[in-house]
Length: 169
Image 1 (cartoon, one colour):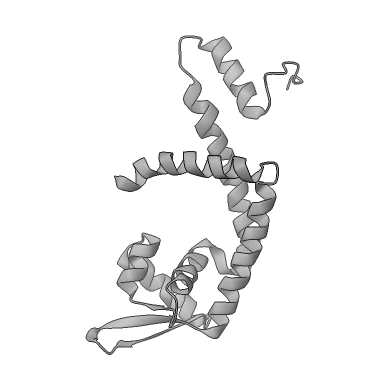
Image 2 (tube, rainbow, N blue to C red):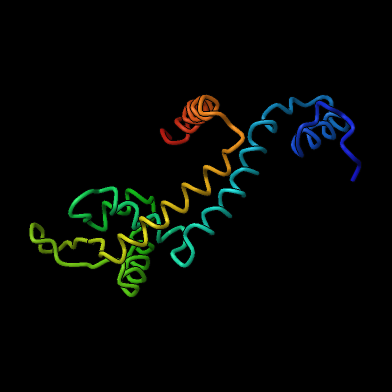
């Protein structure tokens, strides 16, 4: 690979775009400047999350975090958890089975709906999700370390504007 001799090439994405401009000057490559960087950041975020979650895994954190955010008594129905985590019924059942085996949640019959059940975060689950969240936030602060508080706020606003289009569909 050639060394970076162009001061306008700040990172690997700039180098890729420059190469594409040379090969395909007829194309508007501006989407690559944003979305290729988002893809690269997502890879780093995946690594940071794996490190923070340890044995919990992303899906386990998602379920436990939904219960934790629900507030006392940290309890939701499987249907509510499916909405929170955007997974199917079968997937949720498998996840709940695994988390129950690990004693991170309990399931009991819903007293208000004899056919339904309620999933409750255990004390062990609470400690696991709280610890994972603290580790995740530390890792994410490191990922954003080169940005000022104002830059982070601006970036969050811009990304919110972008993601709203996807969330509304």
